[in-house]
Image 1 (tube, rainbow, N blue to C red):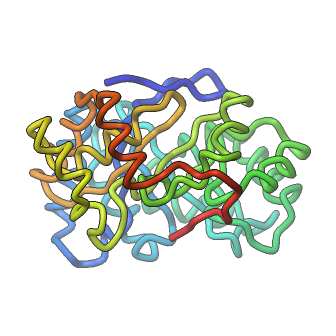
Image 2: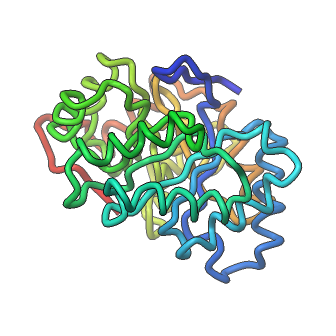
Length: 276
C-alpha cells in the first residue's frame, strides 16, 4: 500500500477506511466491525470516524474492530464544532476515548468551522497533545481562506479532510495547490460520491470495463492519482471492503483521465467548498 507523509513525519496509508453511517443499525455492529478488521488486514490501517457519526455509535464499532490490534491502526476522529471550545474539546475527547476504548487518538479533527475561534480550539488541541491524549490534530471542511487564517494561528495542522471526487473537484483550483505548497495532505471523503450518481456514470463505466473493475473502484483510483491525497471510502461489509482495497492497484491511463476530465471538467475558477 502506498503511503502519504504527514507534516509531523508520520506515514499513513493512502487508502484508508471511512465509517460514516456505521453504528446506525443498517447492519449489525459485529458485521461492520468484521469488515473494518478485514480492511486492516488488507492494508487500510487508517480508520476515520467522528463523535457525530451515529452519535458515537461509529466510534463504538471502530473500538470493536481495533480491539487487540490498536498499534496497527492510525485512528482519526472528530470533534463537533459546538464542542470545540477551551472546555468542550477535552470533554469531547474524553468521551471519544472512552467509546474507542483507547488512551490516545492519532489525529483529532475539527469537524467543520463553528463559532469557537481557531485560537481557542488550537489551544485545546495543543493541550491534549501535550497530555498524550492525541498525537496530532487537523481540520475538516475548511476552505483555502480558512486554512490561511488557521496557519496564522498555528503551523501544526497535519491534514484537512474534504469532499473530493470527480463530481466535486472545486478544491483543485486553490485548496489542493495551497495544501501541496504547505506539504499538508488532504483526506478525501466520499470518493465514490453520494446517491449513486458516479456509479451510474457512463464515463466511469467504460473505464471500469477496460480495467475489469467497477465504477466505484475507478472513482477511488482517481482520488489516489495525486500525491498528497488520502482516500477514505466507507464499506460496511466484507465484499465492499475487498473491492475498495483492490482499487489501490488500479493505475489509470492518460486516456482514462482525459475521459473523466471530459465528463467532469476540472474547475476553471473558484467555487465554494462543497460539503456533505
